Each structure stands twice: as structure tokens, then as C-alpha cells.
Length: 318
Image (tube, rainbow, N blue to C red):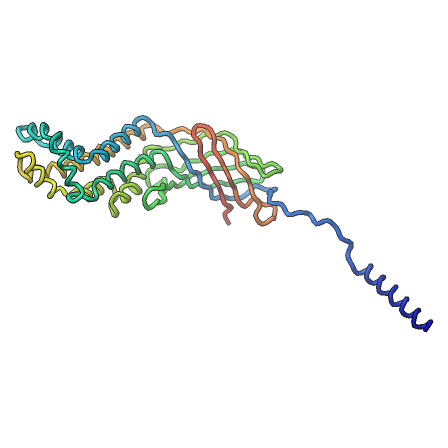
């Protein structure tokens, strides 16, 4: 019995000794952090830019709004304006206030796409004149020295195409600065200037986003308007209601009027490009280390302040 108790005691001591030797001493594990230590890399950045349209653009927006609000009068006034001087034009001018309300009641059948199409052009132009997304590439060195290059733009109207600035005659926009990254992950981008060819961007948005939104397949406003108005059917009704002038004369006037409207709009938009839009911006954002390897992987919650207010976000590129 004594031998058995001694053996049991020795076995217990041996077990405790082995357990204390084999088990690691617990230590506090370092918590994982999403705060990056190194901001360097190449990042694809998207800036959502909102601007107040300049006065010339505001006048275009107002004119398009009037056309969309009173489409029959808009059509008649533009048609009569291109008629050759003479009795037909004189009588037609006097008749516009009386014929326009009547024509309004016929547009749903005669030109069912006209009213929604004009509204799309009006609201679409207002949108591309006040909002554009800039597609950028940031190259950041470990010291924080960075090159910001804007090479493309995108509109949130219609098919939302990506437009290469070079394709519309605009060179890439670049700026350099030295950003900072603090121990909380806050990114600070100092104030710097960029110059945007505002008119060229608006014109691209009008042709590539607004026109096809108003009339699928249209490559410019002239094509969109031509598809929205059945000048042959319209001319027969107008000639009959006014009581002077042939349908052929009014049909030619209708076609010429739509071409003139598109040309006038294009001319006004081109005039917006007389001088570049100068923007002075400073930014703040949050840098995030997604995979905990010390490198900055994403740029989140970015905000530009200065000449305009805008947001931005970025993603590390391979």
C-alpha cells in the first residue's frame, strides 16, 4: 500500500513538471490595426465634383427648361423664325399664340417622344453642367510626395460613358503636392490648383450622355431632336391650322429649326470653353490598411474643400 501511494505521488509530480514545462507562458497579443504606416503606391481615385454652372451655362439651362415646359410654342416659334420673309411668315407669327395651345393637345399622338425627350435634354444638360466624376491616378512616394493625374471623366446621365480627356482635345490635368499621413490614419492633402476645360467636359457630356439618353442611338443633340419630332406629320397639321403656307414649307422649316436649335446649343456650349475653370482644392481622407501589412490599401471618406466641394475615394493598384 505504501509503495502504491509513493508511486502515485511521484506520478503526480512528474505530470505537473511536464505540464509547466510544455505549456507556453501566456502573453498579450498585439492587436491588429487598420492604420497604415506607409502611404506609398499607385492609387485609382474617383473625385465626384459638383460645381455651380457659370452664368452662360445657366442661360442655356433656362432656355432648355422653357422649351420643355412649353414644347408646342417652342416648336412653332423656331419653325416660324426660319421661314423666308413674306406673308406666310407674318401670318404664322401672329397665329403662334392661338395655334400653340391647340398643338399641345396633339403632341401626345403626333410626337409622343418630344416632351420627355426635351425634358431629358434640359435636365441632362443641367446635370452635366453641374456634376462630373473625375477618374484619377495618384502616384505616392514613401515621403508623401504625390502626383495627381486626371485622365478621364464620367457622367451620371444616360449610359454614363467614360470619356478620355485626350479624345475631346483636353490634355491630362496634373498636380503635385506632399500629403501627410498621421498615426490615426488621417490623410491631409495641401491646397493645390488644377485647371479644368469646363466647356469641353460639358460638350462631351451633352453629346455622349445626354443625347443618347433623350434618343437612344443619337450621337449629338441634332440627331436626338430629329428623332423626337416627326416634321412631316407636324407640317400637315400646322399648315392646315394656320391656313396659309404649304405642308412642304413648314416641313422644311421644321427640319431647319431643329438643326438651328442644335447648332445654337453647341455654339453656346463651346463659348463656355473660352477660359479654363481654375480650382483651388485641399483635401482630407482616411487611409486604411485592409490586410494589416502596413501598406495603405484604400483611401476612404475623402473630401475636397476650396473653390468647390467634392468627395473622393481611392483603391491601391497592383
